[in-house]
Structure formats: structure tokens, C-alpha cells
Image 1 (cartoon, rainbow, N blue to C red):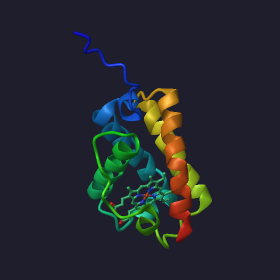
Image 2: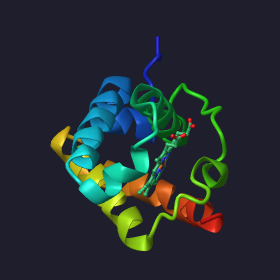
Image 3: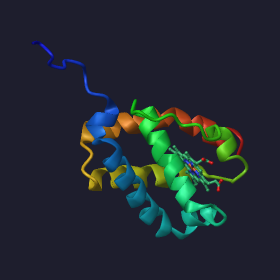
Image 4: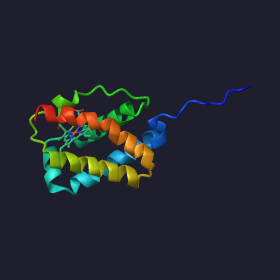
Length: 126
Ligand code: HEM
């Protein structure tokens, strides 16, 4: 037989799949917890639900087997007063978390590229 798979791997696969995504989200949460300014945005947030929702979204946008069904990003972040500086810090923490969890450089950059359009959504209703 010729059952070999020739498809290009998805970004989800290149990142290391669900276990890596979950490790990345947990790693990110520790970084956020260590940043007094960023963590203050999460004062009234159920962190378990946030972690699950965030991981589902990373899985979805990396073409993994998940569908993010939470609120759209502009609604989820509206009127929080998120600044450019804080946005950039969260993205930097996410990149550092991916790096520490062994996500290769090219996959990290692809993921950050897919998140870039979300910036517009998150900032729209600030
Ligand atoms: C790439 C950037 C970001 C992505 C992909 C993202 C994604 C998400 C997702 C998926 C949720 C969960 C929505 C839900 O299920 O209700 C969420 C909630 C939240 N995000 Fe973000 N986020 C980003 C940036 C930020 C930044 C920069 C901040 C603050 C500095 C922030 C603060 C929050 C807070 C506080 C919540 C919880 C809201 C609540 O308690 O209901 N996010 N985000």
C-alpha cells in the first residue's frame, strides 16, 4: 500500500499538539501572575475557565481539532482599558512560554502571526 501521509503538518501538529498547548497556557498563566499590572486585569476572572478557553482558541487557530465557541475577542476584552504596552507584554509572555515548552521558532512565529489580527479586535472596544 501507499498509505503514507504527504500532507503538510498543521501548525497544531508543529506546535506539539494539545499537551504542548496546555503546557504553554499554564506557563503563560505563571508569567501573567508575576506581572502585577497585567494580572490586575484578571482580578475577577475564573482562571480555570480562561485557561480552557484560551487553549481552545490556540488549538482552533492552529488548525487543531477544536472549535472556539467563546465570545468574540472584541466583546471578551471590551472596556478593560488594555494598553498597547500591556498587550505587547502578554504577547511576549506567550512567545516565551512557547519557547520554554519547546515549540520550534518557525511554529512560534506562525502562531504569533495568526494572533496579530486579534490585536485589532481586542483594541477596537477599549
Ligand atoms: C493575543 C492576545 C490575546 C488572546 C488571543 C486572548 C484570548 C482570550 C480568550 C480566548 C479569553 C476567554 C474568553 C471567554 O471564554 O470568555 C480571554 C479573556 C480575557 N483576556 Fe484575553 N487574549 C489576549 C490578550 C489579552 C490581553 C493583552 C489582556 C490584558 C492585558 C487580556 C485579558 C483578558 C482577561 C482579563 C480575560 C477574562 C475576561 C473575563 O473574566 O471574562 N487578554 N482572552
